[in-house]
Length: 433
Image (cartoon, rainbow, N blue to C red; front, side):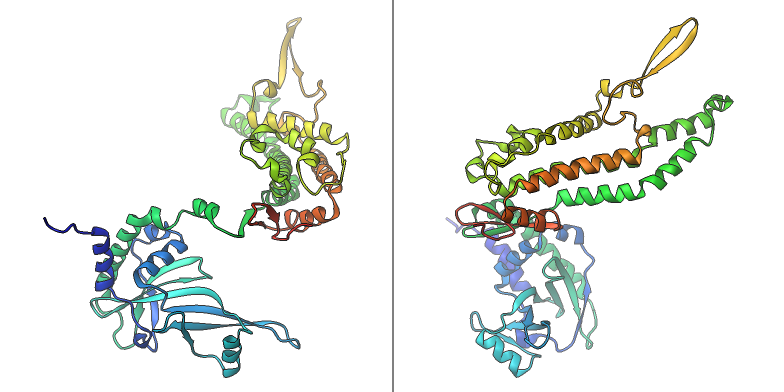
């Protein structure tokens, strides 16, 4: 019986045999690189860490690692240099050139610790050319490029480079589910773990402020266009003019409405991030299902009881929930677009005359349902209510929790979190007392 063939090993051996990695002694003294514009979309489908693992599995450690050297001087400000560390034949031994003896000594003694920011492999093509596989922009971008040397230019290396890309992508497609599964890997990591949340609260709040800033002049333009023709005259019977009137009748108020929507979304984002940061560990159990069990109103109501870091027996002001309910009802009318919320007017015929009854004019509403009637004052009122709710939540926190919330949730574009070994989530990576 013939021996079974290990196709996986065969493919990997084929890549390494036909396209071996260069040793540091074979690195050209001077060269430039030219990106290989071939199957780039497929290459970009994989994360940089995936390519790092794939190439390390084929060629072991990178041939060259670019590092930052942070040097601190008491008399001067900190300054940063970069240096290239090249792999040697000895395991975990690297050599670096282009730095002075003092700096080299400080690295050797551990006074300066190199911070790895990029890596690269140089691969030999069968045609004699060289391909560079590496990263740039602090390991955020992976590239495959052709090495151009002054002595031989590109020659006929492009064809071989494309064959190399084909083989490497074949291997990538084969092992794509094995090398990198970010969510599962993060959950299974031992020890302390860190992650960033995009600050949806601050994003929406800044968007609301920006929209508020441009709303009045933009709404003026829309209104001027609406009033270009008079619907009370024969303009109404001109098809083109009528279409123009109807178009702007439906769009007027959209900047005010957008600003209001962003402020309300900001409030919801704030509450959800506070829960993520401070929810008591015993309530993080999947069976408790805080996200599914409580709506936003209930989250605000029970926040001091369910979250850590709130003053003992703290209760939010009694005015907060009614304020929030007004915002919630208006948000629901916008997002759910129910027919009853869109009721604009009732029509009556009396004595042969047609009368319309404006629902907004004769009904007590927090904000008009018809967005053309919104004003900048309405937006400012919503903003003040959102600010009041956020401020009330901050005042119910203890000093340390409020400081963390103000420093990170209210200010940072990305919010850092740390998961401690015991499973506790800590905002900003600082262990709370």
